[in-house]
Image (cartoon, rainbow, N blue to C red; front, side, top):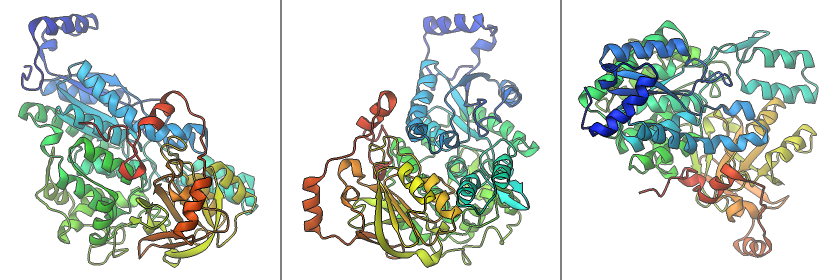
Length: 558
């Protein structure tokens, strides 16, 4: 049954491989079936990948075997940003995306897989898998792990990000230690992705919008009967793709990549998408830049009210309202998506048709949006001459224009301790630099600092400007991805305490009140801060691109 057009084997190489398969109990007849790799990130270290257990793998193997294939499980790296937040380990999370992409390429090519079903959930792993799948370009389906239930404590909705806000409130004295620990204990009640429109759910949505995942996978709660049925559909889908010789590059193109950006804008998706989508697009031979995001942001309104765009609505309310297919339905109705765009499981029109009625309290019509523009904006000026990013759907409109004196810190840790000690006050523009892709290196997220800002009730009263990135759940006036970064001599490196910084989200501007002549003079006195790095991080520092180009190792690959 081997599909010779996907993999070509001579008799000797095939027999050599099969001899090793026989050692593990594979029968001679089964070895003739197409081998479908179950590329699995399951581990006991994070809840996003935990649902991909032996029971789920058994279900997938059954479906694939019944359709004529032989499914074999291959483990690869699965990480969670939350495990290392505000620690040196956070520097490894973004580089892991490129590591995962290489792992997918390696296990697929080395083992001569004839198809793949990829299992992953979290922030960097899903885009890394998609990048690898585009390189290998064999029949591939992605099945994501679904979202976890929201937590609750004393009648308050909780997610993981609330633990950081609670800590700031505890340090300030406005929350007791008992209540702080109660928030920590109750924030994450089940496995799955954190239940807000953060990076994990944004990237799962990306995989589904590209046509790699079954309809509704990205907005289905983890480990439910519906989720298990979607897993079986994914298994049937990869065998259908093998029979019909459908590969990711057959349907992932410039239009489908821009469809993903449209969905991101409509849902106020994570700012991390502005790193991941350009990196994925490059692997598909497409061109997605920050300017693409900004153009589409002006065309597509934000219509979703999920945390952090809403104080209490989570993925539970989102799924009940229609989920990802419901958003697609409203965007098609508004003329903002092409219903005929195809993927592995049919068209976007087919996806929209799976929802009979959309709850407009949670997913608004395009004609009656939450915001008339998308949830992300690209800023330019003499800070971030290439670009800077803000998720303005999570910013109080009163803070869309903001000016204040700079308070400059060379690391998030320094700024975090400063705000806990009340050394940062209302009206300040905090600059955190040398946290970019090369500067840190690894570009850790600035969630901890912004959570402290929100925990102190200063979300509309303090601004952050950084070459670092953010968690998808970050709220408040947080501007990141400043490019060129400080380490490479961007003007961010030249700002001094007291310099007046102006932010105007509507005008898309970010500037400091310092003349070009003065900036040039300061540049002559500037020496970069070089933070220690070795091994994988040093390799990443030497070869990664800027945030403007996706902070990826593979941007210039032919």
